[in-house]
Length: 177
Image (cartoon, rainbow, N blue to C red; front, side, top):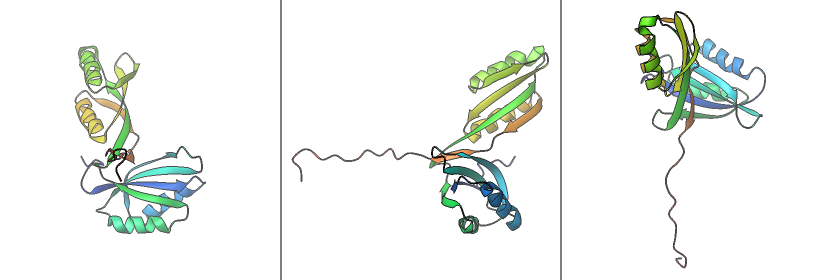
């Protein structure tokens, strides 16, 4: 399965002006150029004037530098950051409805608990569950759920921000110059 953590995929965090049509122009750029979007998520930031688009791109469809250059040509693009899996905090949400007859229901509940997921709804023959976390965790959970039978599944797509710098500033002693 080719997931957004693969080497051929790169994550771009694109800060844009929060105006009508910006997302459509970004998606249109990808469609016109034949660039493949693996994952796309967009939402306003803490500043209502801006939104952040997280795009996971398939660099086999076009070189990353070309994609970035084309994005910067669009009006309303403020900043673009490439985020590696090592330099970013990445999360995704999955909701799935799983076949859950009486004989396997306990196993599914245990699996949800092990992955720190949530049970959202319980029916006579199925359970709807959710899990948020790193994309690799979601991939692993989805793979294990497949053995029970997935009725429906939806993943949000990846969201990501750069990791914070955790280095401690060097302090000088009082009187040092």
